[in-house]
Length: 248
View 1 (tube, helix red, strand yellow):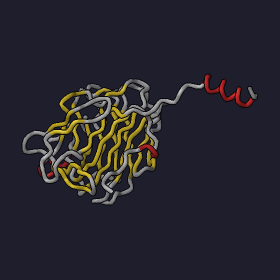
View 2 (view 1 turned 120 degrees about the vertical axis):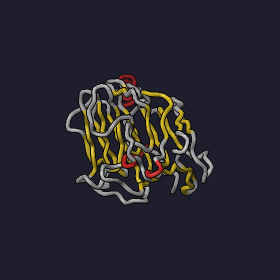
View 3 (view 1 turned 60 degrees about the vertical axis):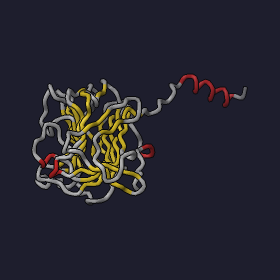
View 4 (view 1 turned 90 degrees about the vertical axis):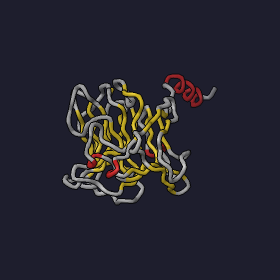
């Protein structure tokens, strides 16, 4: 066997195989009827997690391009929530990526959450979790985006102060790699990263809300816009493998 070929074979035996990213949950609304109210949606992926909506608070199925998305009106307090708690659950040292495609129509003074299973910016050892949001007009990063991740003993706020155009499709992702490094990605560009690594587990006793800040009773905490898809992966997903915008 030629030396170069022998070296290649030995190297392939010594190196661990690359692990493929697994979709844990992905919610889409393409099977909904445009103009109807979305009463339930179930994720595909390794975990089938149903989302439901209380009567009179259902989001609307909106035709967007060749697919259907979920339309949320903040004044109507429209939302979806998981039937189970501890939906966003990651073990210590577990890489993850949470991403979504969205348009927003408006924000509020305090900001509007697209996805949340905890209250925004209030560290609580008994209530860890994640919030992805459009930042409020009362902040220095008005109409930018933010990701608040509370591990219980430590919390991280990743943010972009660049205003996003309303009524335009945007992609948002928050990721953790195998070394515990967190970053925020907006429209396929990393815009912020945590100053310290976060390797701890992340388990929330709350259900997952889409279209609302967990524990919020004010319309200010509800999303005002359209969400096309949400995906949770058990790996650090690179930009080339992000969710595809099916509405364009």
